[in-house]
Image 1 (cartoon, rainbow, N blue to C red):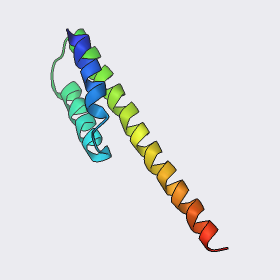
Image 2 (tube, helix red, strand yellow; image 1 turned 180 degrees about the horizontal axis):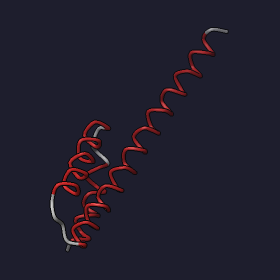
Image 3 (spheres, one colour; image 1 turned 135 degrees about the horizontal axis):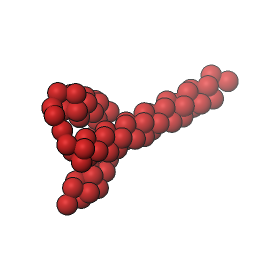
Image 4 (spheres, rainbow, N blue to C red; image 1 turned 120 degrees about the vertical axis):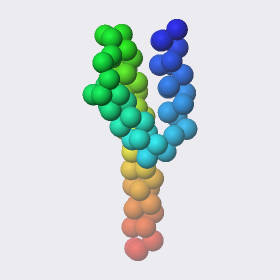
Length: 79
């Protein structure tokens, strides 16, 4: 059942803004640092954190691609 939580997190992170992803990642880190967790709970938090990092990287990549396209379009207009 806990593995379902991780797969549900994949679905949820797809629609989050980068700011929301960073907030959730911060909450996950605080939970790991502040609570006494079992090994399984620590693993679940770590897995969730890794999914959030992946989603954050993907969000950054999407923005970088958009910026690159704008830069290329702009450089074509100046010629």
